[in-house]
Image (cartoon, rainbow, N blue to C red; front, side, top):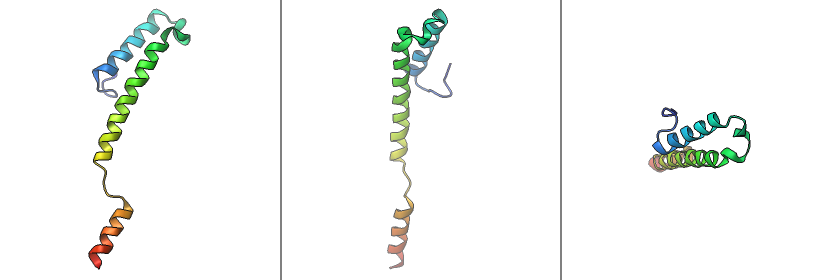
Length: 76
């Protein structure tokens, strides 16, 4: 279970699905046999990353240049 790192059920299900494939086909895991599951896992991970990134952009703090501009206006 990857819950601490990936909080969505979709991502956990995809990772578990890929693990089951690797256990069932240990020799074939390097071949295209498991590529679909690997792509799904990467897609789910990317979606989670983009969600976090967009959330952080919305909560963005003022940059140094914005702070200097605000400070200069206050002095004038």
